[in-house]
Length: 484
Image (cartoon, rainbow, N blue to C red; front, side):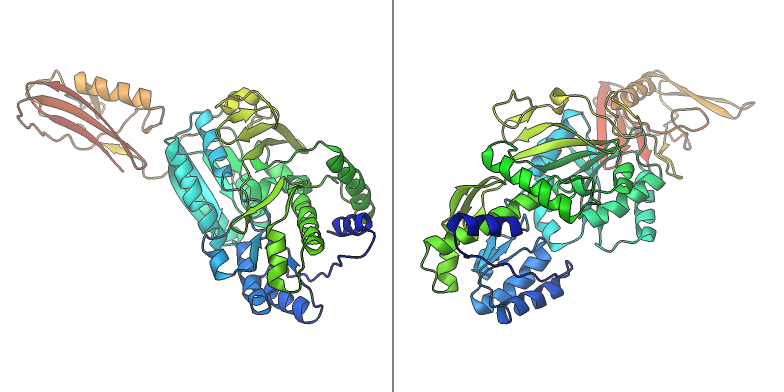
């Protein structure tokens, strides 16, 4: 923001803009108090900066009493927000389309189920629930577990929740939280050996856009993670000029930091200051309402993208960068564009619907590029699946059960058993391993039911999914059921 104010004032050869700062420490109540102080004591005309919806809603309530426009950097807001707070402007492009990018990544590698971990906030309710659910449903991917976590989740809670997730077969995780909470999640995941082979972790923009500022401890616990983040063009004279000056200023101010490149948040802040400056110059702005109208009329190509408002919001982002965290930093794999798919470059690239087209990925626990994980593994549940096998058939061609009393062991054969075994093989899921066998015996129960067409149905249950295969004869009806 300091850079933007200096640039704008120098460009117009007079002091149009002055910056007043008040830290809210990301606390909603503190944000409201800070806004009231800036308006009453510093006589500010515009407020910039709340990044979470929780802070934004509190500041908007204060600014409404004074007719002071508030430019929020929260990337999502409820559809009713503009009517409730007419002076609220969403100055950061919405990133809800990233959920479609996440779904397409999952689809690319053939994973059919996913665990979703998200921060239980009001913004998550409007940002992840509707968009991710719809996106996953569109590519026929089901959510195995949906885990909401409080922002202040401690190690005890994380240990318990991740332990429960580890007990199940699904090994694909989508994490949509703040960077602070993500640090604790991945630290615990690494401690519980959940960053190993066959695990898949995907992070959204709220985490990935801060990857350039992550410390080594966090990077080391996120090895192999695939990240989706807001993209921006790193070309053009304006960006190159900004980048050169940013490196110099940031390096002098924070010499201990190893990574000096600006992220999307820095670019959004720069553009927001510029849009306020343009609005103040071009409009009459004798009051807050006129200043608000001038801000909403601004139209220019900013560092973060096109600045143009529709219903007090910037147009949503339609392009995202895909990265892979590896070693001490990360590798840029390529980009995803709405309605086009994946590509190596952000502009005029060759697009493909599969992420496999943009190159190899370093997956967790493998230490190098290799084939994609299956997305599932042996469950660690103490109470395994139990499979009942019927006995007493009119004919042993379908199900034949033999018992060896000397070994206390059952053996199974027949057409129905062959169908079941073949079904289990094609499912690509481990049903159970007990005493070296593929399934365990319940008490054999006779269940003959004469019907016009005798059918043998094998019902296989995995999580909430049932796969039913029906084959028929004209003798009797059999059902084999797996119960948890």
